Length: 172
Image 1 (tube, rainbow, N blue to C red):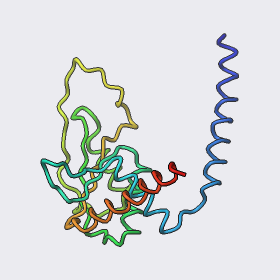
Image 2 (image 1 turned 90 degrees about the horizontal axis):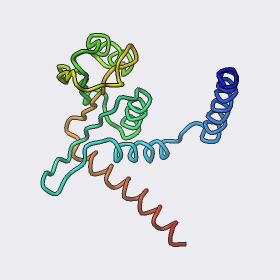
Image 3 (image 1 turned 180 degrees about the vertical axis):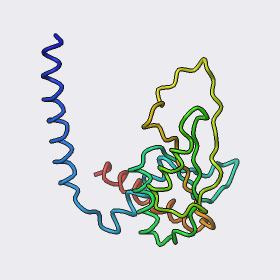
């Protein structure tokens, strides 16, 4: 059984990479419009949204995936947001490599260190068995856009257009 899976893992790894490369080629480079659509949908999935009991009207996006953070930053560029209007904050467990995570996110975003707010540390609970440990764990990065009420409302509109378009397609 072990010999079978030793051989099978490499075959499946090649199949996975082939499928990923084929799918990426189907998409190709994103247009400005497509970037707005992708970014608005990503925000609606991962960003902070207004609640009936709490009107926020501010753009705040949090995620641990560097690729998704970079997509969101590209989206902000496409939406005309000046990078100087962005602030960042790392959220991470206190037992992790906090300084390493801060360096990682600073390098990944290409931001100025003055744009980073104090890191938020999550207290360690020994009874909890966490899987997000090790050198690859860099916590979550929160991206805040200052003075973003208008942008938030535009994201609501873009998302409404995308979701209403999906509803229209189902009616046909």
